[in-house]
Image (cartoon, rainbow, N blue to C red; front, top):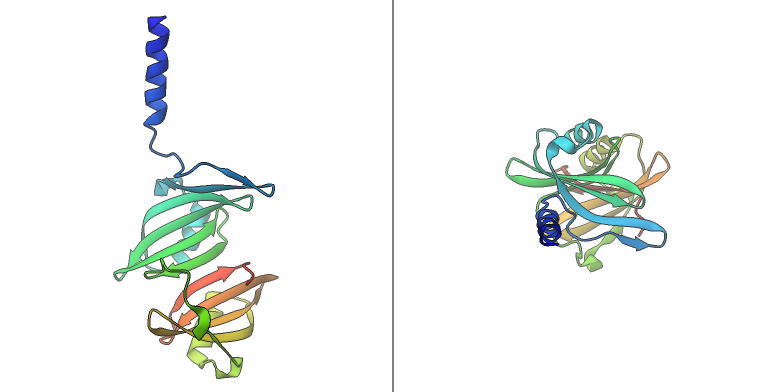
Length: 184
């Protein structure tokens, strides 16, 4: 009996010390399983996912990787730095880029009262060209300007490959964020 208790205690201690556990447990919602982010080593990120993330932010050095399940598919979040700016790329295992975030974007609850719809013709050519280059084949249907962190940005909304796409571009024609498949 003492031996069984010692074995059980060792097993409990071993299980409790594992380092790659998800930050929180899985949740079952509406038939879809969503697992909170699990930090993983970069070498566990599929080659196609890593290549797509590196293409989305050329020159970035990724230093952190997370894996989670969103709407039944595995998604990787890669974080890294380029020229002192933090970047995060969400990508599927087969290399579809879902979202690119740059800079300090902890506050996703931006005050959207300053968002103003503008005509596509009023979007500067370099801004439009940068957004189109970021998402090949996109056809934009709406454009907005808004102020984020005191800076004016352009948000272009359209469709590529049958999927809704939003591209956020700074006034100096840098793509700040790409969101795919998300509705308002």
